[in-house]
Image (cartoon, rainbow, N blue to C red; front, side, top):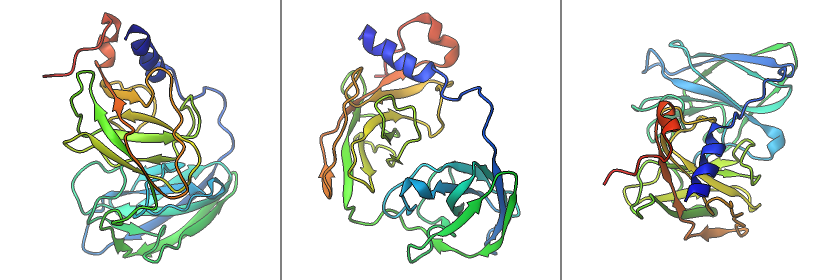
Length: 267
């Protein structure tokens, strides 16, 4: 357990952001409008076209390359390295965190549209692209009833009890240091998570409570499929892989980490 704990602490506390000079960036600005909701709550986001993945929250959740909250008037300003991106936005009509995937009842704009199309933008270094005003969008009703490719399992604490509210991220590299390729919905009361994928390439799974990268300053649950030796999961071309259970540890807040072993999960 001590080696396992050391692995998790190293995984979380090691900085994920380099202090090297950032590469040149470009900017895309615009505005979304939904007349029945003012002021607006929501986010705008970019997804890299080069990744080969088209964002569609009805099928799977992709981690964006850049994301910003909307202003009260629906305006946004996104910065990214030069390249081609899909641009999308979510207008919140539901309660809950602003920076998160859409929830049933929220409105999705630009990417994807109701038919699955997407708005592409080309970002150039040092230049600003104005995409203008976009209206209405479509109402998100949740995941499609069937998913062509998915991973599922149970998130449990060290005592074997199911843990609710945990996210499971899929990474292409064993170090899990790159951008995640997908994220599950939160685990249910029974600890079950469901992670939809759009590719059958091998992935490594990490569980944590928040979307943000870097250390869990406020503490929380964290775990890796395979424990201190992460195991690759090789999905089939289509279908569901079950039994991918993940054990998580409950880390204390950052101020208490020098005291050694994390607190045991509450009984």
